[in-house]
Length: 212
Length: 253
Image (tube, rainbow over the protein chains, first blue to last red):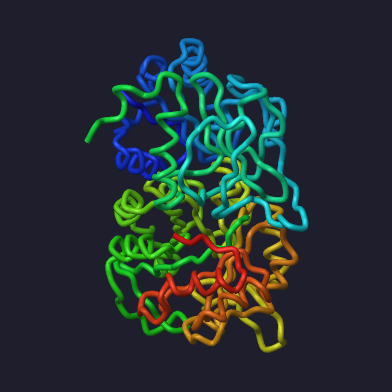
């Protein structure tokens, strides 16, 4: 079973519909036991870092996700869901993220060539040095005010440019994340999901993507 | 490079898409779900549903229309109209909206912006403001579809909304709405310079040049239009290709 975690942060319809279109049907769940053992889990994200972590901790979902990671089960975080995979964020000082991957999110600051925060709209993806993925697709829809500042080598696969290089696709072992919203990135978002998702996870997602 | 956004706004009334001139003489244009799908295929960057009757008649936006639309499109959807409380944000976001715009509800209770931003993130809190130049030559925020003068300076209100936690501002020019003479570039640029959150120009688009002006002169990050697209007066593909070839960063399909 493939789960989309429902932890009270808003719009899940479009993520569900986008994965349905690429042949990965998702079931909504807030059950920690299911989340720990499901074949594939997506942590979506609209919301604020601190509030979201409170919800994940109180519901037991946070520990379920940590166990998933220990057992190398595939987990994909989208937007805030990606940020929560890391250790901390300027958005919620003193609050620990899931900490599956080393790294901190800093608040974006306005720059002459990137004057408006949030970074909101379609932007292009650039290959990072460590990239190992084949990729097709172009525009990705971003809406965020915080960006990954440092992390472990090899984690950042794609960046985007908004005043500076901003990590856009990350992966460590069985946990991967998109800073952008593939489900909001038009046709190119679906192409990206299709081409990236099978490559992102070690051993692929055999049996998860239906053949039709 | 971050693309400028072309946004199509669907004014929704009793489940239909409608259009009036200067918020009056409302006529039905079509089915929101079908129109949303069409715009998505034509390359619009974002959609806005605005329940124009909600604020006045205290009605909620039509959640089933949002739900049916959200599963049929792959671009962001903003919904507004009659938004007052954190509960309204929750209901609209859960129905399938990506962002929620608040207008008179924020004037009545500015802290609603802060509360929603804290719960759902700044990025999904859009301040929509109806702006009109009053007889003393000042841009002022109005509510109730342009019926009520708040006597609040538009630029000051925009700055305050940003400090309260709004993630984006839509500037609807009541004077320019539905008359195809171009956006109000002056108030758009004044607000765009005064805040560091994205600003969307709205009201008055009639031709391709108006969009270009909104980005270059008005400093807008997005430009919104309604009837121009609904009545097929301007082809979205042609608009975006023309803007791109004139050097504006634009998402092309």
